[in-house]
Length: 393
Image (tube, rainbow, N blue to C red; front, side, top):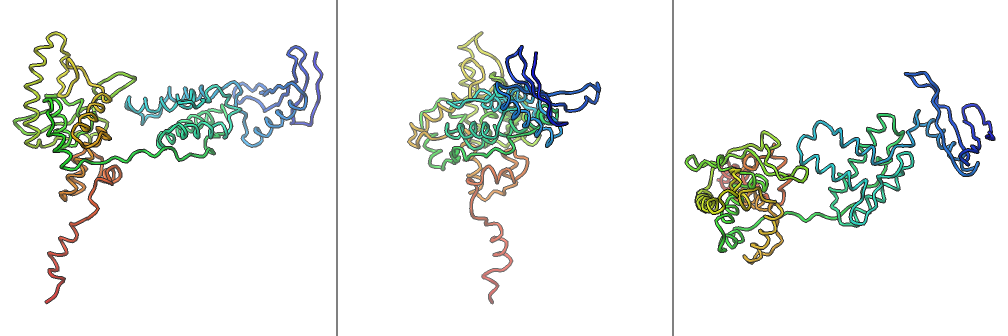
């Protein structure tokens, strides 16, 4: 038995549902274009006044958007759906992992930040999104990480909006907090490199540091480098693959872009260090016997397996501390050192971009701006040649 209240045409109706013990509001939103059946959206509340207010909100949503999003869809559902059917440009496993982690931060939260995965899409507010983002900033997440997290939520809601699951995208209105400032990368001086190589290093580490500083390979490219790509007679290193972590597993995969694949002339010091390391590795392989995993890697871990980048990073910090240059160094900064050394030697920016495997020199300027020499001398050299002594007679 129910007691109904008829409202104006198009306003919907409110009635008390005795079987559920609550007030129910119903709004007619036209016919389904495929089945031609009537479509009705419902709300419920403990009081008649509250039910009317919810129905008014429903009607206003329909007036503005021309549709009403489903009330049984959660934020987790739309984020999971978006990540399960990612854009075509997300090709690498690393990229998918990065965005999957962003989805976890949205739904499950992180470092004391409560996630919003269980929030009904229809009830999600700008305030809910702002709270998660502000929490990530307080927890010390970098601005880039927070921006990526918001991007995943925005794109998830955009797809849900396109599919008629929601009439609004509140993430588009959210404010992006500043976030923690990421430490600016730095480059080693020639004196610091000399101090590091002056240690009593193992052949593995001497070869790694020498190759990293003098060729500018990325950390993943170094750990994924194979002996078959080191051509000592020809004096070149062919960069063709890199070590990556995909779905928590260490793998060796092809490089992302064709420009990243490059062949570098091998400095003499690199050739000497690699030759000594190869002899030491052969002895280690004999000692390991059947335990040795033959992946053909130049810089493997124990028994030939791929090494975790984090472990190599920790070991490098320890070596830097022993060398007296401080331990606040990252693996990627050997690459910054390479760029800085070439720039200080007046090597053209286009040639530096080729050496580090960038798509173009704009990427080099953006990523390694701090490592590039501030003084551009080539123009002055040309002018001095054309106009000696200022053109005076």
